[in-house]
Amino acid sequence: MHFLEHLFSLKGQTAVVIGGTGELCGHMAHGLAQAGANIILVGRSKTKAQQRIDAIHSTGAAAHFIAADVSNKESIQDVLDQSLSHFGQVDILINGAGINSPTPVLDITTEEFQRILDVNLTATLHACQVFAKHWLENQAQGSIINLGSISGLNPLSRVFSYSASKAAVHNLSKNLAREWANQKIRVNTLVPGFFPAEQNKAVLDSSRVASIMNHTPMDRFGTPDELIGATLLLASNTAGSFITGHEMIVDGGFQSMSI
Image: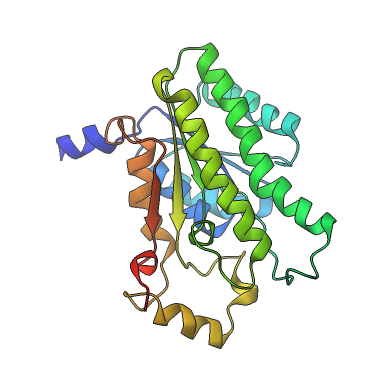
């Protein structure tokens, strides 16, 4: 057990989870807390955050909520400043805020497309810039986990704009990993397959579910807890010390299936 604790323990570290009030990132935050990390949940709704904070507190870990508009870079800087004030340090950043749209390609407006890019892509870039600048100035280690999507690897129907934004997140993450690889900052992409979450419930009708299952060797959706193992590996500067620029796919075999 001591060896596993050495590899995966995050005791004394602080993880900032942007999008932590959501279903998937909320479970990831809980997993980080169980590994010993202090947690900063970032979102819009304190009401949504409170249940997750209570669950984290029940494990004996510390958690704090910060309300923020992640599409605003100054707001992200405020998140960093408040996190440092509250816990004294930040070691892990998870960028998991995201919005989706089922609007068909020919119908999507410039305004709607730009809003999706602002939240899914630009906010991710801004958070990486703000937190990496802090780590670089203090010669500190940092691990960034950006939430990608299986649709960022291969396009999916009904989520055109979301797929495009997530493909850009995948590419951004690789570029930043290359940029900071020799400066103790690792950047990876966690790539969920199909998990029934807020962003995709609107398009999960019976025919789409059947199509997904026909393409998923495990023949089921993922559960949010099944993202925790991959999160801990990418977050840990011990277990994941030589992993950067990687797309960690957690999809029940979806990406390996053709026909």
